[in-house]
Image (cartoon, rainbow, N blue to C red; front, side, top):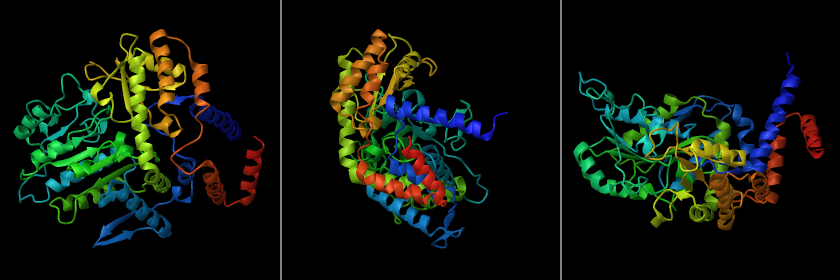
Length: 477
């Protein structure tokens, strides 16, 4: 049996190889991923990463159940304030540790909220009807009955399936909602909860259209927008709160360049008839869904939100410029690009291509990976199965942060076309291209950041001799 030292040596070597491959040799285009800055990463391993800070509101006061939490209490307040500034909204809940958990917290809270006025003898019920985007039309898994919506919506006794209604889509662009059909459907069915948001996300959601349609309903549906993929584009892409949304959920590690965790934001006030729903959301966040809410990533989220608030406009603008340039360049190189051409094929960070005539999406994604281009295969709206996909889904956010601009994505599009259409090997060219983009942007400069990284790293090791050995080892590499 291997000794601990031998196992560590093998694992360390594999980690080092993967770090080098993904961070120095690959063009990373997965739309649901990003690389956080070094300062954000360092925050994740600081002392608080091993601590607890359970708390809840009791009799109007926030009660913490552990000692030694003064610092993390300040961090929670600051991250809530920074995110409230980012969204321009009054209420933030940051304890969910993933976007999917954030959705589940809202669904749990909705069920408690609709049962608040039960009369004696009435049974506890689930949501009567929920509207969302169909999974095969780009809808996010977490808002499906097989995902976070599981057990929170009633079942149709005749159809033997959950009472979920999907947004109708346009025939000539299945990535957009057919608002004419939607108006008829809403008036007829009257769902209790309407969930916007997708994982295959190219165009705006009709939030304002729906909000205006339902504003006088009694009771009116709750409008929720799962912005997981486009959270970092809040403002330049869409501002759901200005359009009438009640809640935004999302994960903080896709276009929002933070650590992996979730967030819930709300525009409701104390005077709102939904004010008690926010109380239920806080209760479902803790103790309903979390105990320890991963304080290392919470601290990292604060640092990432500082960065996002400082560079929001420049970063978001470049994302849209890059995605549109990338889409047009792929089209010019003979690739079928999905989305509405009138909108530049995309309004987000995502670019989706159809590759069926060159092979399945599954095969093409592997071929691209073999050439150090990391994407994911994607079933398109007219595909029959996720196991035999026609598409490839890509996002420009990570490489934008590493400094790629429009012309760089045009060069990348040529290499991608070579791989897909001609099955040519471009691995060496991709590695050379990546060598130009190793420095993180939209954060403190390397010269500024390195001082803080060194200080935080040093303070994380109470044994100074260990830290000295670490520094000596680093200098010898």
